[in-house]
Amino acid sequence: MLPTATQVALVVALAVAFVSIWYFEGRGRWRSLVSDRFIRGVPWGTFVVVGIVVAFYLFAQGGLRNWDSPVIYPFVTWSYLYPTGLLTAGIAHGSPAHIISNMTATLALAPIAEYAWGHYAPSRRDEYARPAEGVLANPWVRAVVVFPAVLLAAAFLTSFFSLGPGLGFSGAVFAIAGFAVVNYPVSTVIAVVVGGVLRTLYTAFATPIVHATVESGAPSPPAWAGIGFQAHMLGFLLGVVAGAALLWWRDRQPSAERVFFGTFLLAIAQTLWLVVWVDGEVYTLYRGAGVAFVALLTMAVTVAAAGSRKPLPRPFSEFGWVPSRRQLALVWLGVLSFLSAGTIAGLAVEGDPLWWAAGILVPLAVLSIPAVVALLPERWLGGPTSGRQAGVVIVVVVTLAVALPSIPLGLLTVDADSAPDTDGVDVRDYHVTYAENATPGQASLIDWGNETTSNNQTGVIMVSDAREMWTIGTRGAVLEHDGNDTIVVGGVGWREEIEVNRTGWDVVGNDSAYAVDLTVDGETTRSFATEPKRATARIDNRTVAVAPRPDGFEILAFHDDERAGTAMMPPVNESVRIDGVRFETRPGEDGDRLVATRGGTEIQVAERESYA
Image 1 (cartoon, rainbow, N blue to C red):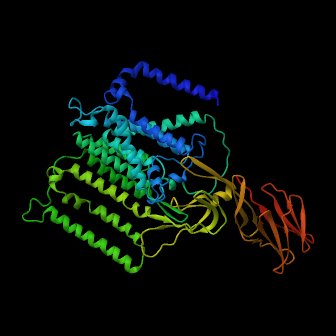
Image 2: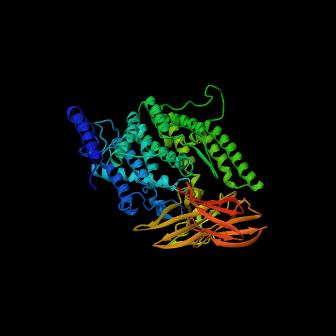
Image 3: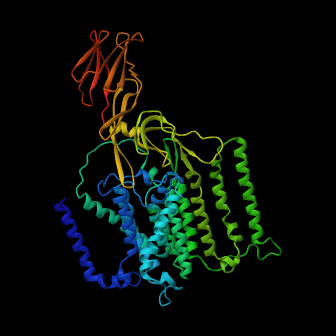
């Protein structure tokens, strides 16, 4: 497709603007700056990673032919028993907006992390303290092997320890951000702005003109409820630990003020404060607690990256005999262990689920941080514990506290009989159907005691025991609003589309009578149909119900609560008679209406559902 005049004008304007400033001001200075760290001044590692992720979206997920609807489900971390999802979730994406957001952030932030790492082996002629040896001294190995491998490892770790099904490179993006901010805080904050600029430039070129009208959307959870906040925090902490390790290895100590404000601004701008709890259809955002946590975490990150190297003061050193710090640490750990054991024992006695203990054990783990630092052998640390070392330990413990609770949630399995007992379609290992109030079919491999009440789901249910997958493809409320949807299933090298269509009538004083059909390769299956829905309106002691049938909808007439007759719903502007009542389908502004008439009395029985 040829570019539009607006797209051509946009490219020309941007080229003139940037080439001009590059030619007149920054050409020599910028090239000499980046050439000291990058081979020929190019961040090759960043481009390799972006190329791998984009190629996976285009080819493995089928985005090259279906840019707006890639194959998603086979690449999600459904369970630790599904290795394909564990290996691919970190580089797979769910939509064009998803991958564009992550790749623009990578292009903005990763060069800073790559610059800190450097393509050239450290030398005492510059700011580095310890030279690399062997294969790590090869610039091309450092650029196109080591750096991309580390970023892909971060993507894998954040997917492996994701709190529930995960998808996307964002965990690695936050790892990049954490690594960069402790090395070059100011540049990292600027890069966050640059990432937003890159997204705007892309959308300006992809959709230079947007037409919109005032309309209401389908019922859906708040936008922040779908963000993988735990994976983002885990990635950020992993990046901070790696960045602090690099600073220690190269004997660098950045400005504490810059690290503090850079970390705080980055964390707030990138919503690391997001803490969400979901209880059925209720989504709770703990914004205040999240911001407070970010403030405390910023202090720990600052100490880990730029803290003092002086030994921590020994407690009560001015007194005579007092317990040593290790004795105090053991006592403190003993108290915390007693509280932990008491919590688990209490839950077991009361018969409550053991996973409730996480709400108490995680804070206790955080409280154990000072004791863990005190118990570390001094030979491991090269002497008495310094403030900087203590900061690193704090960040490591918080990282473990964020990562480890995800393990029980990943030990899930799906029974082949867990699909709802409704008609559906089978596409290879996928079974797709529609159901109301279906009980989720995933079960934990660990017996946690009493089973908790599951949040039943209504919508298009997708089950694959080969992938340990049980999920909602389209929520029932969304289908009620839109009327139709397309479910894409598939695997590496194949995809199949399932068309979902809902038809129904809103019955006066009752729920809708509706049916859901699934179509694959031109063959349609009636997956779900409601029971007859009776209207509350009465006409001469007669009531009416509407029921879905394979070839349309049926009218059921009742006289004194006894069935008086049935007939198929008439077409628009036509009518049928049942037990002396005339039923007519009339056109209306919002949809067709079913009207009942007898002896000069007229009532509306139902109205055809209309969709967005």
